[in-house]
Image 1 (tube, rainbow, N blue to C red):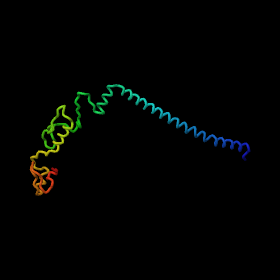
Image 2 (tube, helix red, strand yellow):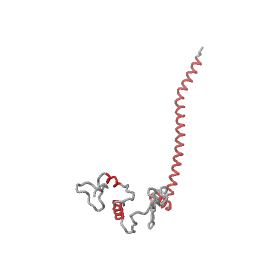
Image 3 (cartoon, helix red, strand yellow):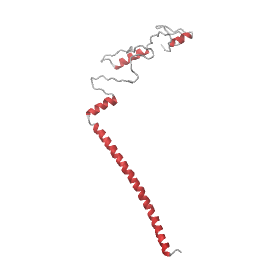
Image 4 (cartoon, one colour):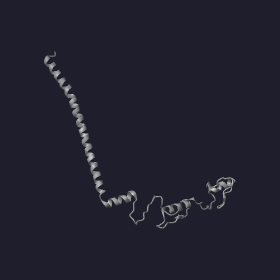
Length: 171
């Protein structure tokens, strides 16, 4: 049989559990959050220290000059910049397709006083010129001649019917 004393004791224990359980759960949750926040604080302090050391490096004039050279490709007045595009692909001076020596090409160097726009215009004129005919006869014009059209020689005007020359250029 259940006595009144046991019944009262069990009600008091049950009431204590009901009242203390939410408080205990909040304590455990807040302890976990506090632990996470402390680890975030340690990470933020470490990042702050790294950024502060980087900021201190930028106070050094030699570091600023080195970064300007490396990142922005700046040069000091009087220096001549050189850039290697891809050192792995340029290993020798022989064209792998033709087996002939690679030259500097038709665009020659310009004097220091030449304006940039004149150098660009000369490059455009060279690029727009007709390439020299190859010895093999397998160029783009060979297929056009086989189709029954004659390619105009250099200096000839295009046909009077308004069609473009076989090379695809428009005059």
